[in-house]
Length: 100
Image 1 (cartoon, rainbow, N blue to C red):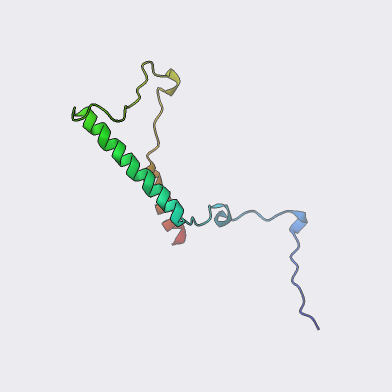
Image 2: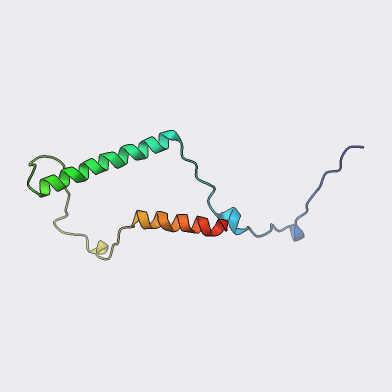
């Protein structure tokens, strides 16, 4: 005789609540192309920062120019940029805590 199939019926036709693990983002996989793009952007940005520092110190008269608004937007008065390094650290620690 053929093997019987297991059938799971929903209680009252409702879906079970999602578990926290199902909600969390799947494991991130980085391809070589992704890593190459990140490295390129990082190295290019480091070069821009070096050129900006050189022009601030009067070592160079050409190079990148830092944009500064003459009349800042009052709606952005309390704007705080995100600290990506801190955010990544928190994500890393949360992942470790979830695994243990």
